[in-house]
View 1 (tube, rainbow, N blue to C red):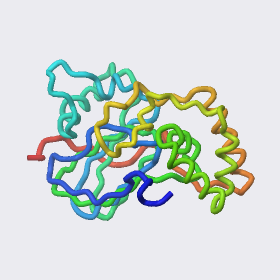
View 2 (cartoon, one colour):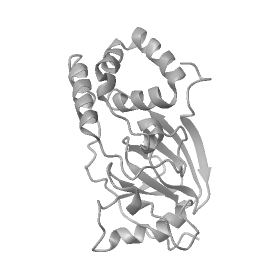
View 3 (cartoon, one colour):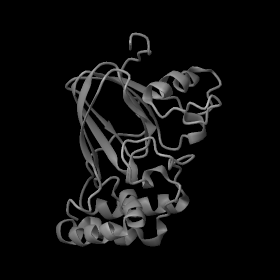
View 4 (tube, rainbow, N blue to C red):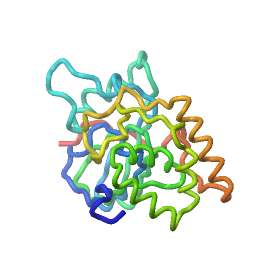
Length: 237
């Protein structure tokens, strides 16, 4: 589609201790990877479908949780309570030389435990293409037209997927991944990223089409626990 129409998708990010990204879902249903060059990061992730009202509630103190350190200090402790009403978070510590891959639709917050430098990029692949395509088609229609024209030339299998999906794939206007912003605390996050019956039907179609080309590249299972120890905010001056 050309770099002028392509949304921002790759960055070099750096920041001191206590900086980071508050809880969010990446835009346009994309996945993302983050390769840490220096420092240590703390990650907290929730699987798709976790309601926003639990993980990003409106607070009575008026201060909000737009900063990563605020979310970890005010909201994260609630996930440890016995009456926490939704899925427990997956926690990990990322150290220099390690890469974290976030599947599309996963809520995630990141806190720098010391000075950090990282490289990160959002991506679309055969696995998440159906959702990325529909979000792009709705929110960036001109770019979508150029994109699908290019796919007809270099990835006819994905062009076929787009045609198979048609109107069967329902994309809610409140879906957080429809946002065109990236790695931000956007107000467009929805109450959940639940899939409708139409969505599941369309994904089934897409899988059938892709399977004609052979087995898919293995992808992370959404409910696979992410290994790693937890650390508190103590010691983060």
